[in-house]
Length: 432
Ligand code: GDP
Image (cartoon, rainbow, N blue to C red; front, side):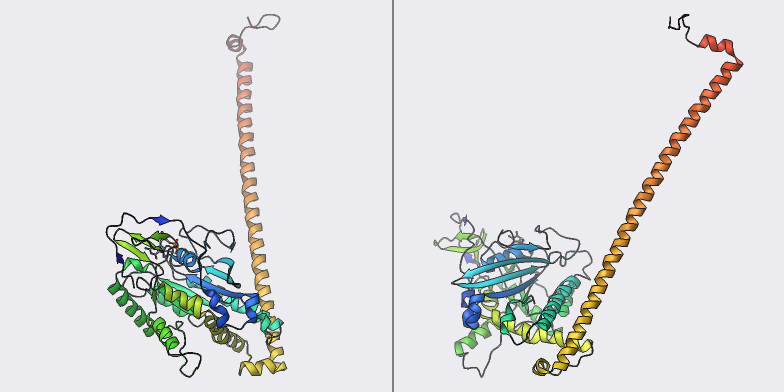
């Protein structure tokens, strides 16, 4: 918890340059997984949701020790880099590969700028749920094209493995939007709730805030990710169980993020945030729960998060989808070896694909029609303007001619006055 080091006065504290190539901790992964995957690397898809300004990009950079939000090594798809408030929720994907002790982590951060930023946030969850579903659908489609029993296929996996949900450090409780959103996604993703910018609250406030959040989670029956303690498992000794229990007891983690390196009065260089009264250290368990988050997300339970996604959340989605399509599922083993069932699935999936294609084509057609209509409206307006212009010109000409006619008639009726009023010319026609 943020028990800030009271280092008054602090004249020597200065921010050194950012250090973004330190140890992240996923080299521990081979212990979590079997050896063969080490060569190919691990992929991990992390969804990040929370209001603009809650420190999402800072925390991701802090967690992975990399300037992911502005680095050229990352691929930004579908998005815009600026953190300003938006009119709608965007889905922005940042991909990078981090290597540590010969272990590669293919990381995909899926950010959702614009969430909770609108005046009316009622539909903020829709694009995010659509994104989660469409990633499940792509996997479903992929899985039906390949041999499900081949574990080499694991590298194609765009499913969301964890959701970091940023809670505003209000000190009160969850907001209605938090509850609504979490309920929309809790059956689809491993939710890891975190209290953002926890250095803005004092320790007692954090403890109370955590209790209120947990109460809201319980009352609303929101499922969040908790690592499992296996009482019968020989691999988990007493210390492991204590370690896991300690993680569970501290959820939702109260986090501070920063990639700035600061020198403390006692000469240590730490990542932290500097205040007139002292320094909040990121990597210090007495100051905040960053280390616990890193232990849960990266160092110890990354594989468990992936397995839960695959074996529970995805299977649940898949079964529901196939049941909706009229294909009754018994269990996954039966499904894999029953050719009739598999054929039915493939047929149903093919139909979904066709329906999607048809819907896409309809949408494109409608778009084209509306573009054409707009073009026609534009050219109609142009034509109308041109017509108006020509008409005005003609009217002007008519007016001029009428005036001339009037003048000529005047001349004809009153030649004398006309001669007087005209400039006098010499015989040769020159003006005098
Ligand atoms: P995002 O819009 O959620 O990605 O937020 P940013 O990461 O861009 O952070 C917004 C502002 O909050 C920046 O000025 C950060 O320096 C600051 N910030 C980020 N993390 C923390 C934190 O843990 N504590 C405090 N006090 N400020 C933070």
